[in-house]
Image: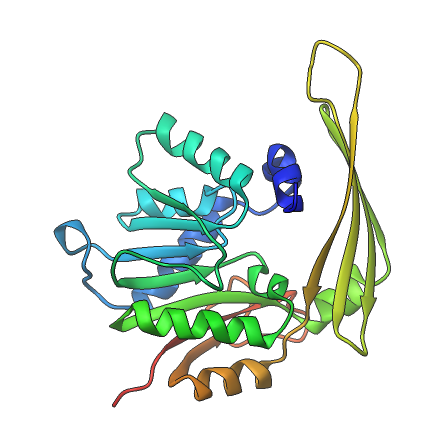
Length: 260
């Protein structure tokens, strides 16, 4: 498979179990209530929300439960399969689209866009974030907002750095050897996954892949927004309504259109 997240789909939610979808959805809802539009183009004037890089859709589904008309977009077919299975079992009417988030197409405009869990850092540079800004501006309603988080320099240089991480669960074992190049601001996670795909035997399949992220500075994001006729409505600390702190692992941006 070309997309290594297709390989990780079966174990992704377990691997990310420290990131509570309900907590993330509640935080995003708080930001939308403060900075976003009050009514939207969805059913009964609900806000249409687009989750760029939605993965297995856990946060998207929680936001749907909060009353948003939700759309999830991801390039990993297997991750979206997990999302579709979840929403089908629970009777959630969510539209799932298998697309590259830098080149996605929608059927109409939307009120809120989100991109979470370092998805923007996976874009490998400010150029691809600008592509999202262009699409976001084209598909966004006048008072719409885009909320996304990015990993901080501390997150890449100190927490990940050149460390090794290890996860051992019942059906899989994951080894993560990390390398961060501060000069190029590029982070590479070399991942080896051993997965038991059949609980009736003790055979494990091995998969190897590399996930690359890039640290993006506040200055780069602000300049990219300005170039594309967008403005920064807020810069927030990790799961906070206040300004970022020095020890934050990620920060959140709230972006909208400049007023004419």
